[in-house]
Image 1 (cartoon, rainbow, N blue to C red):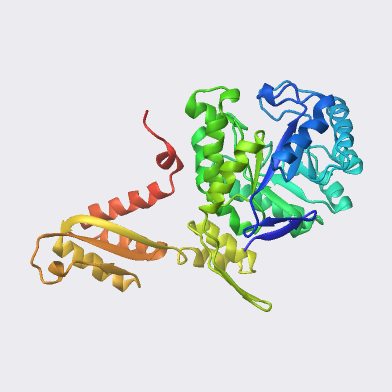
Image 2 (cartoon, rainbow, N blue to C red):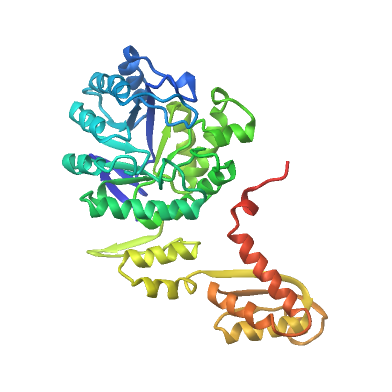
Length: 408
């Protein structure tokens, strides 16, 4: 179970999904209607709090790739007075910056959390500032530039490296919030990859950190609806509800009130994770659907790299329906599946040879299915064809373009 206390705010599976309201001081932003003037910062924050915000994220530099560039002095001059203007508000303040000296000033001025969309890759000294203040950090998946991992597998690898590096440099494991970098951060980041991320956000649970989803009015919604940022509210709400249903703990949004309604309904439809505790002993049912995530889970408890590689293909069970094959082929597939430790279900007529064509369901681990494929590929009848079909089926299950592209 994921359960953390972030600067006094409880975040996790058994807590309400937290709402982070965005105060945008950047005139260069992709969403012009979100820009807040310096004199309206306090009133905007109070309005968001009254609408249900648990945190306020304030930034002065647009991270939109097409935005005009500003100097660090300009970012500082916009940001620090705004943070001072928020002194005393009854929620946590997150400072959205990639630069350690600006983060240092912001924390001294009253901010509580660092939100670094570069995941500590832009300014290595950011880790020193975070350690100095012992403050929570939001770390976004990034390799060389903010948000550049493409696809969920790349996001998982990036966040794994970032978390390990942060913890090795004195950041408390209980102070880290992770962000999977939803949005078109690079030209290669097509909309399908954001949909893959939202659909598979539960994969991030393997890191045992609170998960933040920053979805509000982003370009993948515009690509789908063919609408500008000002007209993406309903699309944002739909995507947010899916992210919450799939496991997000914090939602970053420009639109607090409508987003909160969607979040509360979505979290009511989200089943609780199954775990049991007695004294210091805890048991948890892991809902993992990717063999590489199984490997990461094993590594996290100290299993060796070699051991986790060997074990990973034994951890997930697949149930595969095969229709309209001959009774003889079905019986061979069942025999070969049983020989590899898996199983297969056949209709009664197949066992008694009373029908020529049948369906069957095979059940086994990734490794067992893989070994079945290798075995029947060398046999007669239509078994090599069935092996090819099973191979294609397994490949499609891991193919982002196949799974999330839609014909128009």
